[in-house]
Image (cartoon, rainbow, N blue to C red; front, side, top):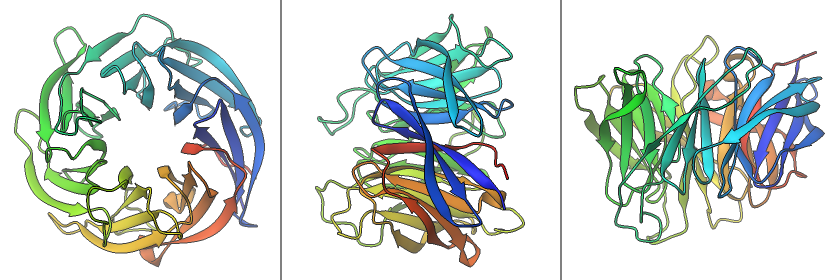
Length: 357
């Protein structure tokens, strides 16, 4: 049975490598690579499986390309350049460019991948966002929290937590990305991340802890609102400290043929920890909560699928509880914890490297 190296982004100075043994159902640390302040998000190169990118969440934001050898045990920085902004909280990788969402400066960086080794170098360029929302403590200006390409049409999507819109970009005549439209959400909702399925857009709202489904035709046609639901069955009265975080829709496959949406909630007051919620989305316009999984983790941010047919889900507690690997069961409508490792500090995101025997 294979073993899976998993890189762990964090609110420390390190990227930790864990190894998940699917046969013995164990999770252990194999190495730690010091890279700089708060490498909180990590994503891999499309064709170079051992090359990954991360952002350092600091006032002079940096984007790093890293290479990991020996099943993730040996990591080194390949290149380091400016994120052209402050506090890059998310990166997204295309075949020839890396995008970075600079939360505090309200900018998106577009950084070319310059070599066959996956390194980054100038020049890149940035896109300035502008907007506000009713929450004066969190929405005093634009705060992009993700940047992601649509899987089938050439658009770039940017959830702007500070302005209550999901911005849409297309390439202009010069080949640069240019603002071309948006998807609006409820005022004060604070869109954080999005996912796509079957021609629809799904958005998790951090500030109001809701998930929204829109019909999403390509531009210039406008989106159509379909449904909005709380991210949990029994949300606490507002105002509260609950915050929606990640949203994932793994593509249906031979093992898990029914599509489900998985999202993480943070800061649940329950002693049983935060909830991962699972929604049924198969029927057109549907968004039905089917399962809530208590994790025992505190402040669950990033979650990520891996393994054959996305069989496994890894999650971590940024403020306690360590890291856990779950197996999808009941066709994907539930999760069962099968391995855990408690000695990881402030995990925020994950990336699965290629499996080995």
